[in-house]
Amino acid sequence: MPIIGLNKTYKTYRANRIYKTYRIIKEMTKKERYARFMAYFQVAMPEANTELHYNNPFQLLCAVMLSAQCTDKRVNMVTPALFEAFPTPEVMAKATKEEVLHYVKSVSYPNSKAEHLVGMAKLLMERHGGEVPNDFDALVALPGVGRKTANVMLSVAFDKARMAVDTHVFRVSHRIGLVSDKCTTPYSVEKELVKNIPEELIPRAHHWLILHGRYVCKSQRPQCKDCGIKDFCKEGMKH
Ligand code: SF4
Image (cartoon, rainbow, N blue to C red; front, top):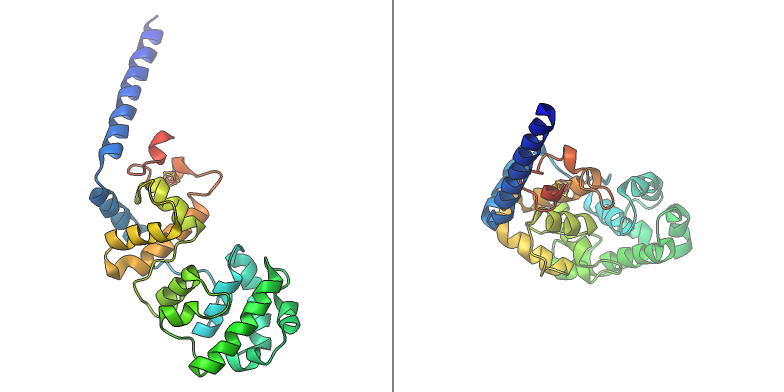
C-alpha cells in the first residue's frame, strides 16, 4: 500500500511538472525563444559551416547545385573527379552535357543537373567573365539556380546575411517554434527568420538549423530525449 501511494504521489508530481514546463514553453514569447535558440547554438556550434567540399565560389556553386534533393555526402563523393575534369567555368562551358553527366551520374536528377552545370558555366563566361556573381538577381538568372541556391552562395561564399531555407531549415524552425504555422512556404520562413535573427548571426543560424536537422531533429525520428534545446522547443515538450 505505501508503495502504491508513493507511486501515485510521484505520478501526480511528475504530471504537474510536465504541465508546468509545457505551459512555460508554450507561453514563451517569440523573442525569448529566439534568444534561447541563439544563446544555445553560439556555444554548442560556434563554427558551423557547410559540409560540402569546395575551394572556390565556382566549385561551391557546382556542389550546391548538385546537392538539391541529394545528400552532401554523396555530392562530396563525386565532386573531386568533377572538379579535376572541369577546374574552371571556361573548361566546363566547352564540355557537352554527356561529358559532365559521366561524373555526376550517381547524384539525384543527373541529366538535368549536368545540363544546368554546363549552362551555368556558359553564362558565367558570357556575362561575368568566368566569375561567380556576388548578386542575387545575377545568380538566379543562371540555369539551375533558384532562390535557395543563390542564398547559400551569398551566405557561404560571400558572407552576406542571407537565409537559405531547405527542408531541414523549414522543418526545424517550425518544430522549435521560431516561425508560426502560417509560414507555409520556404520564402515565408526565410522572411520570418531574417526578421528575428541579428544580421551578423544569419549565416551561422542557417547552418545551425541545417546541422541540427540533419543529425538531431531528423525528419522521421527526432531525438528529443538527447536534444540540447528540448527545454524551449515547442515540439520537444510533447515528448
Ligand atoms: S526537442 Fe525534438 S523536436 Fe525539438 S529541436 Fe530537439 S529533436 Fe527537434
